[in-house]
Length: 142
Image (cartoon, rainbow, N blue to C red; front, top):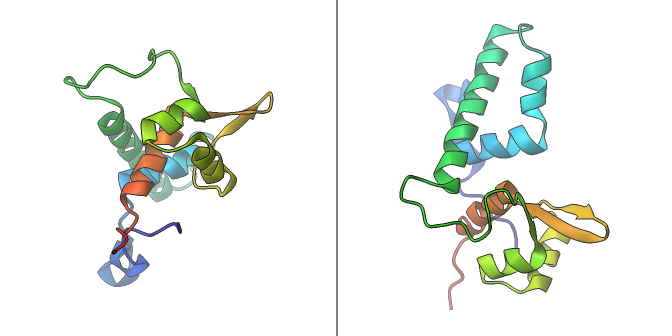
């Protein structure tokens, strides 16, 4: 299975190339894995437009995280809220995949994970990113 893009790159570019629309999930991904949140905090005040954009990324990230992690009528969590890290077995059960499929996704770089004492641990945020990415894959035709 190859990683698919939701839309062609040109669909994110507007106003003759002067504006790029970034989905909230991508903002959350960049803040976490590209370190934009840290960059925002350490370089505040250097460029007002960059500051405003990075704050917008942060706001979009928070809105996306809230939308995927719960609402007032959300179902009870599969693990206690204090458990940020999930094993490959738990993630496999949540996604309806095999444990080997989860480890393959990690090895291919499609699912972010930390190796702790030789075992993978997946954050809930990384799991949500992976779920959203899987939803965007094109359906195979028979």
